[in-house]
Length: 311
Image 1: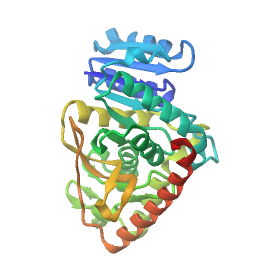
Image 2: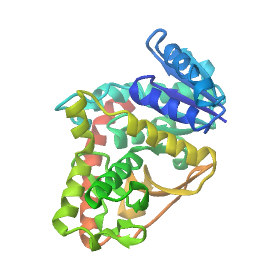
Image 3: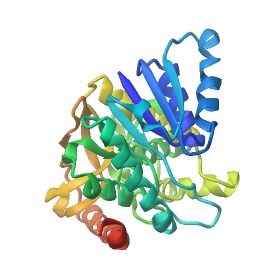
Image 4: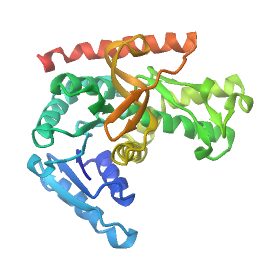
């Protein structure tokens, strides 16, 4: 199985490293516009093969899309990362034209690929990819909810002082500091609702910390995070290539689900070899429905800025 990752920056390279090390794909192509950059990252990863014990083929390429031919999954991380004080929304004008061009070039050489969008603002870039390519909705997946849910479970584990892998929880809604919705009501520790262990105030703090999880790291690091985003992409790619049928919150195109139309936003999905195999309709309560509707309004407002790119 072949995976192409466009953008050899921190997130793209970390994603490639995780996919290679976990033997998720037999071949990975890392592509970047900067001369020699992807080749260098690919060679660096290759030089860990004998010490880490994997045999994944690594190919680096400077803007040569022909090397991406016949990819099963293509991952788009292209665009500039956030800087301190910058919102994901501010990236629209800069990243939209980049993502559109990348998606079109990839599909020339891999017309049957499933597309995973990572570039920010992620929901809007996923929507752009859907509109620009005309691909079936199951083949375009925005990664954001996967990462947000990982952060949510991490903050729950810290509050509970319990292993993160024993905790279940998900985040729906837009992949933004004010639009994501950590579903504290449904979170559990080994099947027991976390509300039996944490007070309402503690759960509210977990939700708040989750929502600014990316911004917190940007402030600490001076740029966007990369370990958790890269690992989240690898987790999603693994579910696709190995047909795992995992339920993963992803940004996908809605046609009436959750009361929304003509929008890409985070909802729980069954992910397998066909990409999005099912959108799972969970029973949100009235407060969660209200938050989801407001989140969709905010994402839709950002999408309005795409008119010039899509015209």
